[in-house]
Image 1 (tube, rainbow, N blue to C red):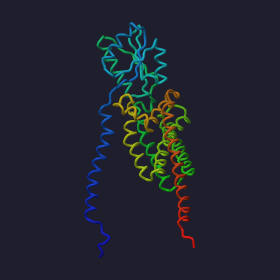
Image 2: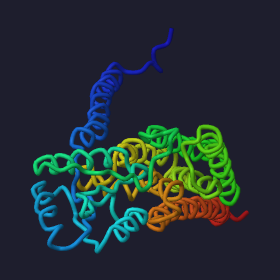
Image 3: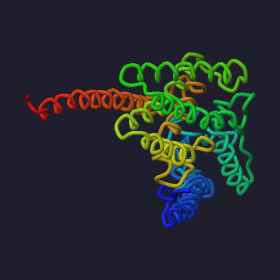
Image 4: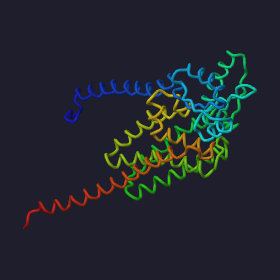
Length: 337
């Protein structure tokens, strides 16, 4: 048996060392990305309203200030203004000082975790003064998903759908316009299927059906276009790069299970720049808040999709130019006979 083509022992050793280094490294990165934000979940400049006469709210603000760095206080003249701020997603809740005692406005649809945290914090302060707090859930989470678990669970499947779409388009060799159309078509179908399941069947989304379908589709397209676009420019390694960013950073940094303001900085901010975080925020807005505060996350997803599709077209054009240049170069070098 010939051993000329056998792999040298040194090569085997290098491969084994590569596995021994890379696997623990990836495990450490995954643990850091997923466990660290979860272990450090706490309010950080969480937007919270305070409403009522200045003299009456001064004590409330003083008590809230004891939670150093936890709340970003927004002042409102009365309950109606505070309620509007909650519905517009300017604040997550508001403490209203009334003649009958303090009242807490929450929005469990924005974040059940934050709503519960506010209830505990305000109730604890009220207990120290011997008063009781009446809680009003201004924008309640749907009865079919009171803890937001289903919405949180939708982040990973949408990210995976985008990664799969971009990978398939790349690996089967679609380029240019055909690749872009395939990505848009696949994302549209994912949006329709997802909203049919989440809205029509499970009832965990309660907003405009088509707006939700568009949000789910745009979230998928943002990831899929980024995968295919980077792969069109740098080759198959582009798939791994975008998949890493989306899965190891986008998902744990999205704040889907709590809120961006509950994550350590700059994790919360970074998460809203990535498709999973922007998609979750946009889905909450269109499903529960009639589109309030939807512009920012919609633009973020649109930019990801536009840049990704642009990269798909650019990569195709560059490859076509390179192929056209090769025969010309061969003709120039060919001997004249």
